[in-house]
Every structure is written in structure tokens, then in C-alpha cells.
Image 1: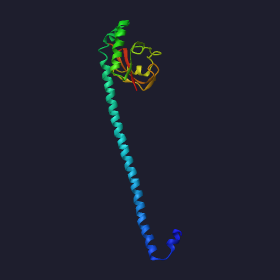
Image 2: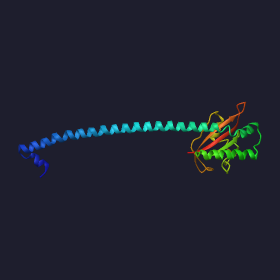
Image 3: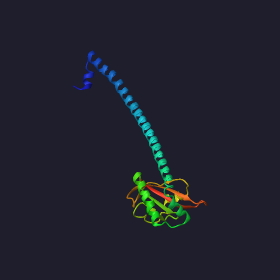
Image 4: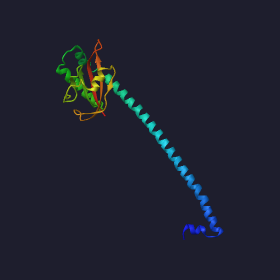
Length: 194
């Protein structure tokens, strides 16, 4: 028997059952759909707020990490003072100075594993000291991070890029050193594992 035939049959009991079902089910369907759409909107709002909070915390943590890296870069100036002074005066670095500087920087990298390579360049971009056995391929003077470092007295960071010498994605952190006439004579660069 079909529903239409059941409804069409005479009898008060059947009419009451059908009207009760219609009056009971219709509000439940309406309320259920309204509740569903409101809860979906509320969940979406909560998820968006949580993602915004997470992004803000991540940016704050990233800012703190970069501040720490800047402080570490600035603290490297004192231990490598001798090669800095020699480059400032235009004196060629002797093998003993190179070896001592590389040894110190290698130990520093072991204590700070984020540092993958540390290098010293003259003002033209020629590599003078590197903790990596292979030197950089090509001159670094034309690279964007090098030019950015020459234009700033602060520690600068490059974009993430793949370093063929290190064999992994890195961010180059660089700082230029200036003489008394405000001309850059040296750039200290550290490759940070990204």
C-alpha cells in the first residue's frame, strides 16, 4: 500500500497519525538544518581563529629565532678579529690565520648545528675563508644576499635556496663590515639549514 493511498483512506486515526508525523517531523527537519548550518559556521570561525593564533605564535617564534641568529652573528666578530683586521688593512691572509679561523668556526658550527657553513668574503665577493672544503662556485659579489649585505649595516637574511656546495636548502645570513670611510671591506656569511 502506498503512502498516498494510506493518507487518502478514511478514518480519524489515520488522519491523526499522518498529521502528527507532519507536525512533528517538519520542525525537527527545519531545526536540524538550521543547527547544522550554524554549527558549521561556528566551527569554521573557531578553526580560522585558531589558525590565526597559530600563525601569530609561529611568526613570533620565528622572529625570536632570527633575533638569536643575529646575536650569534654579531658575537662572531670578536673571535675572528684577526682576519677582519687583516682584510681591513688589505693584508693577504696567511695560512695559519686561515687554519685557526676555520678551526674556530668549525667548532662553533658543531656547537650550533643550524650553521652549515661560515665564510668570509672581501668587499668584491671573493671568498677568503670557508669552513666547507669546496670553495663557492663562481663569485659571490653578484648574488642578491651579498648585495643586500653591502647595502646594510645590519645582519641580513636571504631567501631560501638550494646550495649545491652544502647540498641542502639554506638561508644565508650575512653581515658587512665597514671601514672608517663607510666602505664595505668584508662580508661574513653563514649558511643556515632551512
